[in-house]
Length: 99
Image (cartoon, rainbow, N blue to C red; front, side):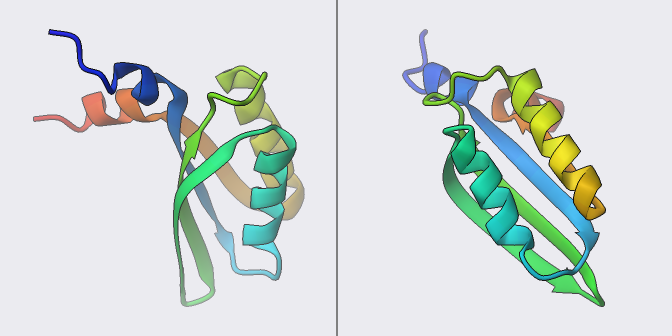
């Protein structure tokens, strides 16, 4: 049985951002994603004792870049800011966390 969401899940990814809290993290990451035509579907962030964490659900369908290219650009941006930024396809993430 073909799931009508299969195509959507292949284009969605989870972006995680971790590091010391600093001004402009959300704006900078959002700008970087926009430059690559990656659409943000949902976002959650928190600061705990000076540590910043953010998770973003993104859609890569409108980007001309591959997942590895987006990952490389985000990682480089994060490194320059002292942040760890990773991206993972949601279908792989979901499969890893199924019981």
